[in-house]
Image (cartoon, rainbow over all chains, first blue to last red; front, side):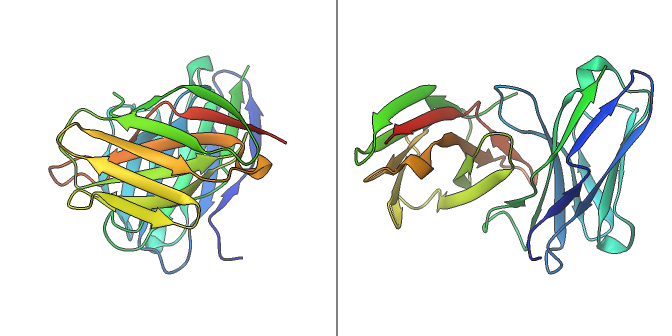
Amino acid sequence: DTGVSQNPRHKITKRGQNVTFRCDPISEHNRLYWYRQTLGQGPEFLTYFQNEAQLEKSRLLSDRFSAERPKGSFSTLEIQRTEQGDSAMYLCASSFGQLIYGYTFGSGTRLTVV
Amino acid sequence: SQQGEEDPQALSIQEGENATMNCSYKTSINNLQWYRQNSGRGLVHLILIRSNEREKHSGRLRVTLDTSKKSSSLLITASRAADTASYFCATDVQGGSEKLVFGKGMKLTVNP
């Protein structure tokens, strides 16, 4: 599979629980991005990795959110003590080189906090 | 905050007709991209136009960019039912950031 893979596709969790999502980018892509999308809105930037280094974080990424990309391959996004406002689609994207080729997005993980 | 703003927010046309979507943005950019999103899925990159380009074609897609008006348009010719999706414009942020800033999107419905 040459696309960006995200797991799980759907996650329902109770408020206060921790959740972790995984993203496997296209193997040749050194850049990896996390975005969040709520209903009726466009994606909003959360964070960006170049190889294993997290180079940029949005102010949307509160201290309950943490992302890692060990060894510059797959990435995980963890949300601690989930709140109902965290319910959204979490999208991962990867790209090769600078922002001139466009992103390849995964299908996303839809999180519902009840 | 969102940079791009698509117009109209929703468009319904018949198969075979052309669809035009407009995007306005607020700050200077290096490039502007258009993406498509089918319901509940990830986004698919359609086309990228650089700030020094005025027009670009890809298959049935034609994108224009007017940096003086801070606007772009996406034209889909000879639309098909399979073109039914949401379309987003996205711009980079000058100043070294790697992020893209997306608009709210435009819902296109192509009726067979």
